[in-house]
Length: 411
Image (tube, rainbow, N blue to C red; front, side, top):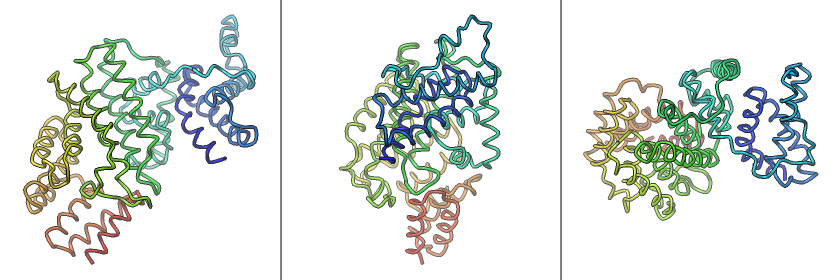
């Protein structure tokens, strides 16, 4: 029962936190009081039973806790004709809020991505508040010390409170300037779930599902506010996430071991998600406003529609990576391009491209790709050393197990 309660609380957490921040306009206070409510739920629900509306119960208990703290700290402004007290009066836990409490997560997303916050703070704050990642997980994703990330998050929350950053979805004319940040944050939340940075599992399905859900909400908002032609990159990102997520059932064994794309059972891929992703991509491309997410979705679509690994159009994928690199030059994009070239033109040519890259010495997938190409060329000693470098940097157990297996094969 306790495990089921914990899972339910985590499902409701993001929605409840967004609602509390909307009420309190203080991220830290909302987080602290929600934590108190979650502890109370873990203590009471296993014996008293799960309430009819778990989200409403958590919201009510956390809001009452916040009211107590504000009264104790004398932070309620009594001069405003009791407006705060009238709107936020203590609610008995037996008198639950309606089941359809407002879903404020989109407002929270745009608040976290306000242009007055640095991009690193925008991403980190959204990962913590909406994605539910711990500070340790976010620090690992950013490759920064834990203390640095703690300070970054505290400063961002204080700025939202002290600068009175509005808690709302911006008007149509201001959407564009904040859209790039929101899209980047959504993709990072999805990636944080698609390959977890810490722990034993390969995937956190809750993060992937939340990123896809928020992506749908964002597409609906953009289409309503700005029209289809301005929504193409939002469509592209949603298509990309759907196409990647369609492979989740085939990415690991029942024991949690990694299965590479070329070895996956494609009958396990979610055909409904593939179809939706391809249709979204085709719709976006029809407006001829191609962006980075649409190109990445096109690459994912080529994988998804290939009947087998051998029949994948790697030459076309290599061209798409070239186009992506022109839009957003990045050593990681260049690494992916080198992999596509290796698959289409041979491992030797791919290895030449990989060994010409700079700035990836601390990136474990660089060493893993280099090791794999060396192994295919028969340079087993060099391959084993490269696998060892990748293993030492890899934070995920499932991927480390795969790398260890490859090292043993090379020995």
